[in-house]
Image (tube, rainbow, N blue to C red):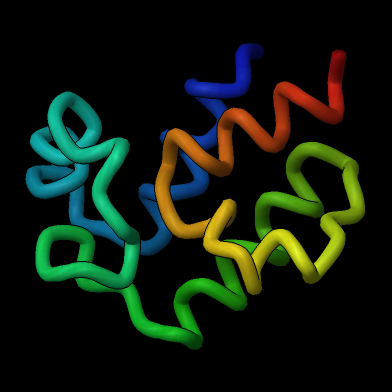
Length: 84
């Protein structure tokens, strides 16, 4: 299963399907904590943990401090960088 598909499945736990489908096409570069995605700090913590569990990785918390973990695209780049 590819990274994009796994991330989509994870995001289904946080975003309703209709909104997720729309955002997946046009909002991957938008901040997850922004108006469109509407995730809060607690959601990001759970997302962080889900990504670690699903991809069997350990994420350096400094990646959160410099906003690499605040867009779907950023999360995907991070995961793919670990896998390569």
